Amino acid sequence: MEENKSKKTIEKTSQLRQDLVTGDWVVIALGRGKRPGEFAKKRQPYSALQSQCPFCFPEETEQEKDVLIYRREDGDWSLRVFPNKFPAFSRGKAIKHFEEGPYFAMDGVGYHEVVVTRDHMRQIALLDPVEVAEIIDAYQSRYIDLMSKKSVNHIEIFHNHGNEAGASIEHPHSQLMAVPVISPGIQLELDGAEQYHRTNRKCVFCTMAAWETQERKRLIFENDNFLAFCPFSSRGAFEVWVMPKAHKPYFERINNEEKVDLGEALQKSIGAIYKTLDDPAYNFYIHTSPCDGKDYPHYHWHIEILPHTATWAGFELSTGIEISTIEPEAAAEALRANV
Image 1 (cartoon, rainbow, N blue to C red):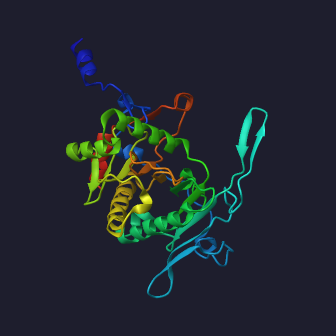
Image 2: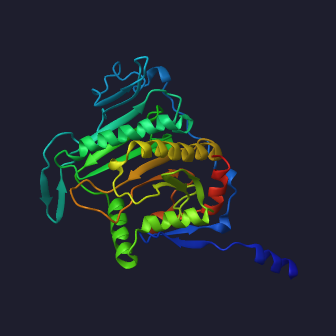
Image 3: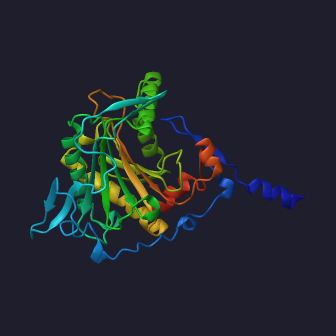
């Protein structure tokens, strides 16, 4: 009887945690609690040889003409941006709307570009922070050029690493899509930020940043301009956000000093994930205010990094509630040890 009682006292109760911005719920399933090392998963290897890589030899493999290229002192390129050879959106066409019975649609027009770094074997986790700052600079440059294009109202910048994360080519690269519609995920955050400000008279993201900086139990890294932390309501194991400390609604307005600090914070965060989880597949993306000509003073841009540590099943698909099997506090502790 005493033995059973003691077992009950050490059992951990799972938690439902609510996202402060969107109101979404996530489950932290402590009853299934895992140690940090148990989340490392062997990634699926790529079959293509490096000698056949289309991004190592973009001219020879007939990639589209560069829209941006950075060169080293020796004349070789360090980064280049070109239109996606197989774009998800048709470039430079006027939008046509059409209806079918009760349904509404429009042509999928916009811009789809690829941001490629030179070295086939050096992913972001293995780059120097200043090299990551150059990637940030390219993101900003292309964002500013595309945001004024006709029919562009939203620009999504994202990076897929590993087969499981949707990267069909091994060579490190990011993608940029400029589209006429605002994504539901961004709209949910915009609405949540505005509602929080209306109720509390302050930015919800600044509130989160101040709390994480004060408490530090979910904090991974910080410098003068940015902090990286595991969100209180992490949707998955080892999710990390990189966020400006100051209130900044628009990513494209980042200055040179901030680019250097962001390059450091992003590289440190991805490097810690790389070491802790033995190079997992992951996605990261930039969430920033739309470029539709409207003002979004209550929003706060940031980067979200999501390692692939689990597969959605029936509960997640049917409810939209995600289950994480490690506390963000424990994940942050493991990541801090590898910064």
